[in-house]
Amino acid sequence: MVHTGKKRTVVNFGPGPAKIPEEVLQKAQTEFLEYEHTGISVLEMSHRSPEFDGIMKETEKLLRDEMSIPNEFEVLFLQGGGSGQFAAVPMNLKFKSSSGSADYAVTGSWSAKAADEAKRYLDVNKVFTPMKPYTKIPEKSQWKFNADAAYVYYCANETVDGVEFQQPPELKYHNVPLVADISSNILSRPFDVAKHGLVFAGTQKNLGAAGLTIVIVRKDLLGHAESYTPSVLNYHENHKMNSVYNTPPVYSIYLTKLVLEWIRDKGGVHALYERNKNKSALIYDVVDDSQGFYYCPVDLSCRSNMNIPFRVGGRDGNSDLEKKFIQGAEKLDMISLKGHRSVGGIRASLYNAVSEEETRKLSEYMKEFMVTFKTEE
Image: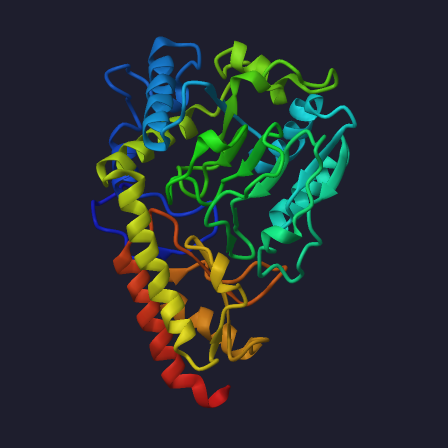
């Protein structure tokens, strides 16, 4: 199929793989058959060629600029997604604890999975009793840290549950590195890398296509991986090989470069943060003003700007109304609004590429739907 240049009308509220900015897709389309007079597509390009080396270096530079990454951190381009990092983190950082333990803040489905995976490699201390369903981050007074922990782990934004840290957690023991999964809110808001020892993110939500995992790790944490750590998950091995220990996801890295250029041209992370706050307010305001027709279970203190879960027809949801809601949205070319299978309901993912105009379309639909169906509540 040949692209006609016609603007896409479908609004993708998917949680990931998610919407990619249309300008990025158009640029990728123009360069798809041939990248910068090389005679070949990036898809065909050797990962050891000078052309691809240039793409890698420019991607890293853009990321460092947009995230203000300090010089004492290395940037790695890896594979395996967040699930790979659930294993890589304990295998690479276990050395920091003489007792072989790590602290985990479980605030949602993804941090829970990370903690379960980490149990294969070290002892996991949950710093507070998880609050199920996941709707709130416990007060600081409830956190119990281990002075000998290898690290403290948290998920900055829970994609499934819609729980987001507004600021990184404050640690009791500052010799213990802070580790963050920022897969679903990377570059959606200002983020202080310097407060962390390691952060990672899959790129399929806010930074491009699936297949690439970015790891930002402090230099002093390199070179101490457990002997059984697979080389593809060993941060030091990958750093030594400039992220080409094995064939990297070349096209995903290229797309991330284009997305980072788009972020830069949109005014950077601070401009996007203001836009993202406006977008999420369009949805939360409808929910909060609906007199219970829509219900978001997440506490006001930690509502996510990126992933907004809500029920239709009351606190527990009305399955018939929610089905009609999704069907009606799809007729208006708004897709991927079904909530995660573990929590049900509706979920609107408002990643950077989703515009205010598109978010307003959903907001207006929610108002119209409520007027039409409130009597069936």
